[in-house]
Image 1 (cartoon, one colour):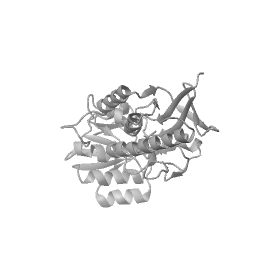
Image 2 (image 1 turned 180 degrees about the vertical axis):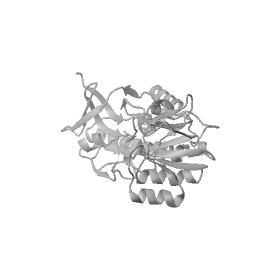
Image 3 (image 1 turned 60 degrees about the vertical axis):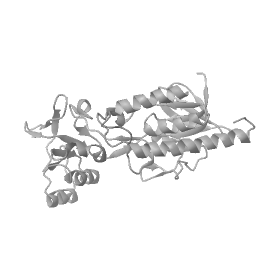
Length: 304
């Protein structure tokens, strides 16, 4: 396969990756974004906590408009998966992708974090339509209404605490698993019902209306929050030998990893997993990558 060359390779086309690419391309770099997955934002039907809009906007619209803007500025996109990296003797990187190798002077990793999702009938169809993965993002839409949290660990309890201040009621769904005694104790102390029965399917056409159990009973709901833990999408980062901390890629305030020329931004670096934060982190990483590439080119006698 022919090797593609670019100044900056951005892995991930979510808000962090696109923000990084914007700052880099406007600084004069050639930028290639490689990704197959648009992430959870693509499924969000209504983003109501982002600056600059008079009302909620869909995640799909935000992403499509952002992609169009970056393409207008000269950013290229590659629909592929990055699978490995090898440092070159001249300081560049050779990145393996499912579409062929890419040589770059710097990398921004913005791969996000994959939330664990159970295999339940109706989950995919109703995600963003009553089914959510983030209380900070979507709890507001269910104020004064009954909701449930699906999960049997500490993350589920955390989400339930957030929802309890907004929803009319919170039910914990363990989906056939047996939670810890600490989980059950907190639920009892807070008055949250815990339903251990396996879930058969999610009910609703255009929006979620409830869940039905294998027992044949059903529970009416306005919202269902998936909180079965988070699986950090760090297998790629780990394969590079990059340092991680608390299940996230470790970076400094400017998005730099300990490996010169490799930067990180967005949900994969942990912290507050919010759209506005990811955009800011992407900007920092993009600026840092821009400055790094300029220094690298100057060191090798290339014009800016």
